[in-house]
Length: 165
Length: 276
Image 1: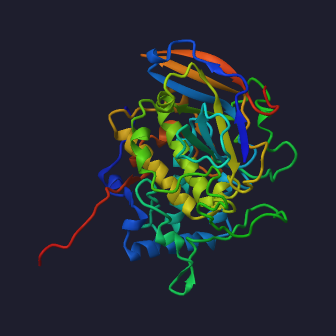
Image 2: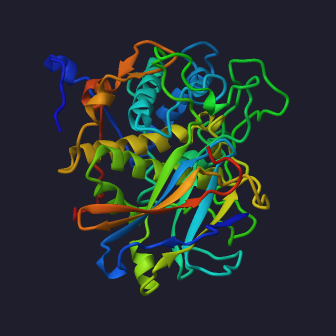
Image 3: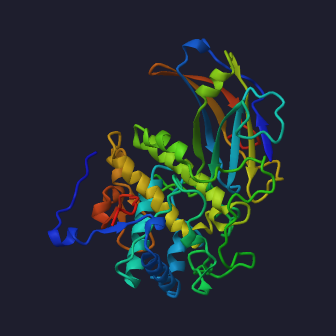
């Protein structure tokens, strides 16, 4: 299982009691390392490895449906290869990264009055639960605070791994 | 929701076929569906099971998941597969697996043997129409919830009833397809478990329950489309082509109305015996 927590806090730039909704957005989550499931916790401190959906800091989960191995020739599963010309109207590569948005408002409220967020993610690949790295990869994590119909982007957290593009 | 419909004769409308919940089908209906799948498995050509499974996984891999084409592409995929089923038995339709309301795997897909013979809905051969590589699986199997450590992050088992409102309350197409896709991912992960093919895009469509799983996804989209908050995909998406390995090619706008594709979903029902 891979663990990740944003090394720098996501600070709330507006008073928590004025926030109507907080979303976390994991941007460009990779799908080229097998299917996996991730648990997301808020301000969970030194979270034990066996934390489940019952944990009071559990905010949500998501599953990625992907492929275990590339069976094709070199470059077949390279989602970065992209269009070959401005006239290339083919659809995106089947492993193009995706965004995952999660409403964490209720969990944040249970925390009381958080002025900053630490997001801990536990991710496990079903076929290899012992694997500790290379499962969860994304470009950045954004917290979006909604006040009424207005949204303000909070500071970005750096992504795990070395795949920030 | 506005849908452009082609003019149809009464006779054509009467040919619309109905998809059913697999657990509400009669034994005879299940058996006919099973026989049609067996018939497709016996065909090694471009009417056969392996041909269609290969669109989603090995070798063609033209499926769409991480984008808003997810729902239209899979609707078109099921449309093509169902037509091939009906070339074996014209009265057969794709059943759905109601993982939103029912626990576990439906018996029709779960029993290893039926009438003393291998149940092709439980496990099917994997024979991609391309040169086989040594480490490829040879037949499908499932590993529902298969994790050694229950405290390791894992998908939720069905039923996912508590997520129904969350998904159906979506107010835009973009929101709906994303939420629907996430529940779909969860089910792929749950039934595939640690070693099953349903958790791997390369092999998922070789498992016969894949089609019932996606029939459920398609049905949920159909229900949301008809709900007050249902809406068409954005204009930019409507003319997008959907890539398949077999004509007729479709655009997104062609798959918005299931009736135009010749099917509809049955209402669910429950029955008790009355006084006789």
